[in-house]
Length: 293
Length: 116
Image (cartoon, rainbow over all chains, first blue to last red; front, side, top):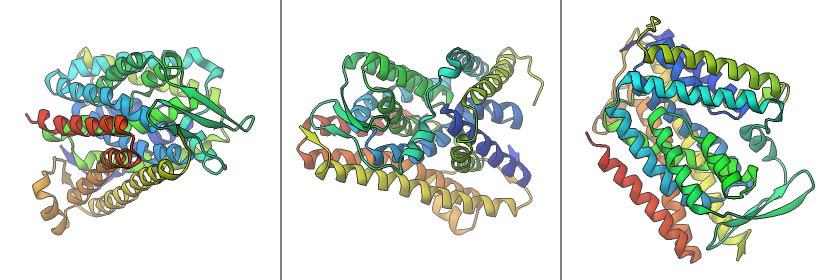
């Protein structure tokens, strides 16, 4: 694959758009990046997935560090669930190397359809973007904490200024879903927060903010685990991955500032439409009827 | 036992430092590679082997700087796994030290299992 200088700048721009939308909506850019790279730039699916995983790591480093700094992340819970996500991610990465490009495109389309449907269903009830809230709240005083030796802690609820205690329960549920989330991440180049956050919140009784923060903390290591597989199999192309990851970092910075002036409902609907368009195109590619390349 | 400050605070500061340092250093290297790349007519996209990384950078190849940037970026979360494992040992939290070292072992397993 040969790249012109203009193509590199377009890759950077794609990362900026995906990172910006991701920061404004809380949905990771991977769901937008992979179809953009595959359908818009003719990048092979596995190379696109590897580039997206690098962008996931960049997002985790940026937003995850803010959450940790604020004491919202439960690092012990994150590390415990990483036992499952990393194993899943390695399995996903190895599976991706064995499966056909058309199968991967179809699987990606299915996950994207589900995410778009979930966004439309949630509508105006959508919680604030984790990235936005993390960056905005970083300026506030007060930190949460976690307890030694167990999966418990407390975080500061800004609404009423009190510390909220929590204990994570039903660890097997969290581990099971985390393994699946890691597998999806390694297979399709997405963060997998759409699986882990509900599992931690609804399944383990962890507060939503702590769940979102801990998920963000985990996605970097999870993505890195499958990236080692993609790298060794020759699917990690720096000329594709670096401009995209750089763009995602810049886009997240811009998106965080724009988000305060945007309507969450309109943003979610726009993202859902974009995801449906991408999912339809990826479905067509999986069926062998995409003529865009 | 709650640990809002002290050792817990040290672990948190260490993780924040590692993640941010990886992000900044990785972004700078990737940005430098991108600047070099846009000044060239056209480039062939290919993986860069670890063994060729230094040579590629010394000869001023954009892909070398970009690969180094990606590597630094990806190493940051891996470094925080090891750092947290050590911190948990220092704190006397043996249970989670074992968990953290197990995650590190799985990551090493992933490197070995990923070989084609």
